[in-house]
Length: 295
Image (cartoon, rainbow, N blue to C red):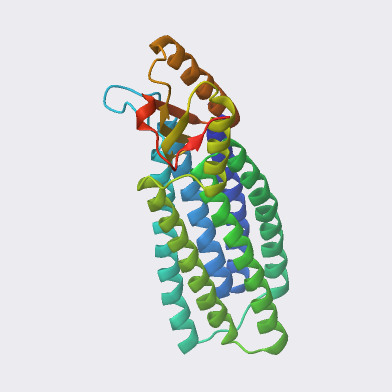
């Protein structure tokens, strides 16, 4: 089992504990705001399981039917998670609208808030750890899961403040209003996750910072070549596919140009984790004014 898969399973386990605590807070108080917070945590558990399954698929080696590997499976996980978040938001909005029309008093608010606070603290610690893991492993599925948990932490903080105000002021309608605000925040979070994942499925290019690093590596390690142009990149899960045209002197032998390509591939794949490099060699008369000059 890979480190990414272990992190996804751990996220599911943390999600189960947090969900149980939040539903306990809801059952004690009857608060719609706490109900909305607990419902979002259920989505965290489902999303973590989806991430685990997607990571198992993404880890499969390339085969005849998928010669570029299965990396994009992680993006499907993030799309599913975003869709689930949106569904949860709609359900919460429905309950909040009923609550505004018929607000109800809270039971045992102090104990309920304390339990929800513990659950929120657990989530905050885990979100920080998961972000570090996701970035270190360059896993879209883990990063999407971490972002969702961060949104859950922010939501929970707002819920705690809102329910505390209900308890302090006796204004019962604040409870469903807070639940509605939570739903809108969750809706935005779900949309963001779907949007980012679709960008990955649409072969979004690497960040400008990474492209600058790639061009610098080509310039530094392409000794013997004249220039490189048409540098293209695309992300697919933890992999970054990089291809470009390398211009060499027309009289250079195939063996010599191949040695330059090997040196460039080694340098780029060493510096950029998950890089998959393809180089097309061209003779000197194919040089372009906007190409990357080689030092």
